[in-house]
Image (cartoon, rainbow, N blue to C red; front, top):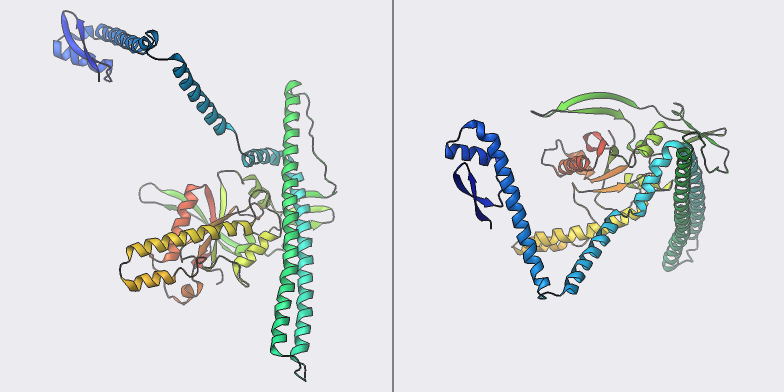
Length: 469
């Protein structure tokens, strides 16, 4: 609440409120109009008002300070209590600033990777190829051992079933089948554990290599600065492999050439936006497979792979829409299983593995389905609907049509983000037309909104919401 202070000018007096948010020019124009003063006194009136307000503000500040200091001078307030309060506030402020300014390990690594990639991309790509070859060798050994085990089990079961005397009872056959399944799960579990350990070790080694290269680049830059940019040395950590890295388009013999055509469209009623569209005939997973080949002592990488790495921490990311069934778990013959196989062939050095991300998604899905069930139960009042809602709780790992979940990747050829859009493939194929209110289209709209929010500037999606045409 302000106070009224008289302002006097040229034998005229007016009460002005202090403090005051009205501008000095506004006050001057009002006083000129109220007192019928000539226009030429406007500059002097402005200066008088400025001095008046400055003086009154200083007087108010002095009074506030005096009222705060008087209790301390008179001994009404203990100084130590005030010091303790200020000390606590300063410590909280320091803790907050320290917490805000300290970057996380992921931020440190991402910054180092961006700095190193520009000058040492050959080393990183060569290291990626070496690690990828190790994982692929382990996968081949695992698949070979599983195939041999399946063949052995098939022979044993075939001999028992085709025994002419039928001396083996059904219980024995069931026990043998269960033993075969347990043996296969045991072998597969051991191999998967070994592969996971190898990937974790590779990930740790890759991060250490990147950080060492980053530290060397900092030392090199500091030496150049201290020597007046006369020293131009480049330090790098040599790899044991004599392979050299070449960025080149692979031969058309080994890679099927894509058929594509491009369009430029403008969308919007008043404020138009320009978009580049490409119609491509290819397999969706071609955007995910690493097309790395070895020729003599040279490693051939596609240019898209280097571009994907360079834009990994940028504001120009690439996304892909993958049509998946309702169940999040991997099933045989599903495109999601093929996608998981592509992800499994190499180590993701920047994000958790696809299996780990799926596990986190399943936990979130159970919570989301529980929230949906509670909301449905609160809205529905009749018993029939309540029973239907209770029945929907039987399987908490099922998504609804139109839902989508996101996985992040750095080990794919041309994709950073994959949107797994849940669709009912059989219903889409049998339906003669899809309305704008279809759940799959709602999900696609939500994906486009997420792309706008999170810097996904390139999005690849299947035409007509199907992978096969």
